Length: 268
Image (cartoon, rainbow, N blue to C red; front, side, top):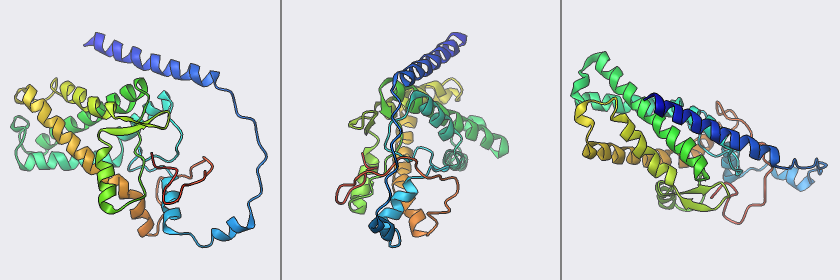
């Protein structure tokens, strides 16, 4: 057990040190004068369309879903580590774990934990622990080693069925650090290792290969449902007309780039 902890700690230090070395080698961009905004663009701000308002929401960081992409640029290993920590304690993580623990309690799943507040606390704790392990392996370790972007990029285009299909497809397709599409190995392998690690603290009845892959399938199903909510999360804020006062969101410092017709620069 101690050797495993030392190995994980050494891996984290190596990833962060490599990220710091790469940051020192990158040349700093020269300061450029700020061009004055044309009058036509200033007048266009007065009549904002729904797509523009939705993009403004995307340009702010969400506390509820920290992995909603607020900028198109790649993340460094240190930022992926911070994202892992943020997702592990995000309100969405706590609410999903609390709801899952309640469902397991009502169905008397994991009967070894018993009933009452004690049993509910054990179910909630095991769910939070497995969720944190999933984020550690998927959002940080594998995403850093395989150069994958662990954030969710909203589509913003197509019919509702197209957007739902897009969100579900993010289980196996993701964005690379270079901006292209790639297989979502972190999202596939991370939950497998997390559920395998969960066998060290779950009841004996759960420590079988069949139960491990059953939990793995359930976790992927919850991830697909979560992706659908993330896909429409900015639209919800826009429809509620609280885009400018959404709690926990901040403007995106990245300058806006040219957008293709019918698309968005935030789409992978």
